[in-house]
Length: 413
Image (cartoon, rainbow, N blue to C red; front, side):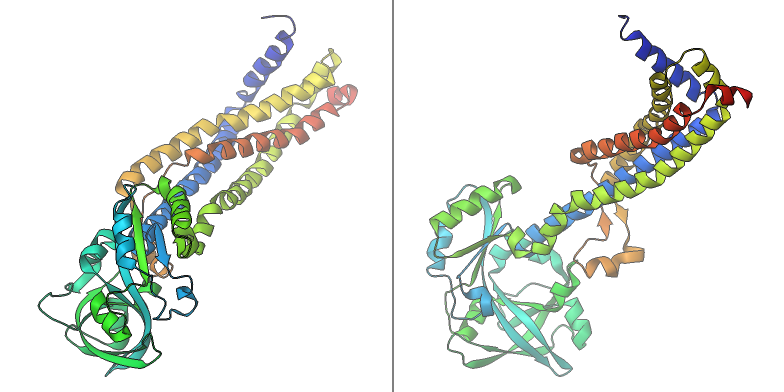
């Protein structure tokens, strides 16, 4: 060790010994820091798990990775705005190796009428085999079954809608809608199954028919309004999106981020939310650290005065108190990180079921009541940076208090 680094080493060594002179006080500060880091990282992991689950739900059960429409379709869901040559387009897309599955749909708004009441709904005409590959529709059915090939004019409605209108399996309902020529059409259907997803608001306004039966009502036989795509990998989203837009410029191509902007906003805002949360935790810790270190400095008034009288410079005295505070703060970080990692590792495999206390609240926003946290490796730099800054700022006031003591007055105390 050279002569230039020796004073710094001595200051650091002295600071480490000093923090253990009052073990209880030092352990309390370390435990406070560990608890703050633990709670911050744990909340990050839980929130990250919630958002990841929501994104998977949006992609795998609701809108897919990408959707293709006529450019005018989404303005008023007009029946006439079909995708030109949809079957030919589907055949082309099936040849793309990046696309794992796709489904053609017909979509219309309608009034659902029953003996017990009426409700505005979005009618989605599906091809069951294709839809199963894209949204796993059979897994959503909680009562009854998917369309029976031997029967016609069947409809799937949600359990939420059935409860609202007091409908049961086998009940007849009437759908009234406008076809491509703006003529009002009506069709009678029997309920063959009830479905339920985690997105209650979406359930309440969605019903399913066979695509060919809905097309007959809309007077658009063999046509589709929507093609939903599922990719082999999430990482291919931007590449395939740009490829579709350049290959089919006359069509409207949107990814899930554009179709569900509220979900994307939550994802991109994660860092900002968590930054604010960690700052609040660290501010609360900072006041406790400052208060404790000021008490420690005042208790050592004579000691500080003697060291100053013996020639310890103000810069080194400042560095000594600074080092003590920083060491106390940073010593709790590994403990907090370790506890958070263990907790997240456990619940990432077993999950956290909050259905008993928040199932309805979660489903009203489209979130699962089972949470599988994920350790926020990509945000550790942010957390550690905030902790380091907190340690530095918390050490300034106690250090200045020690430096501003006059040796003669300190020795008389």
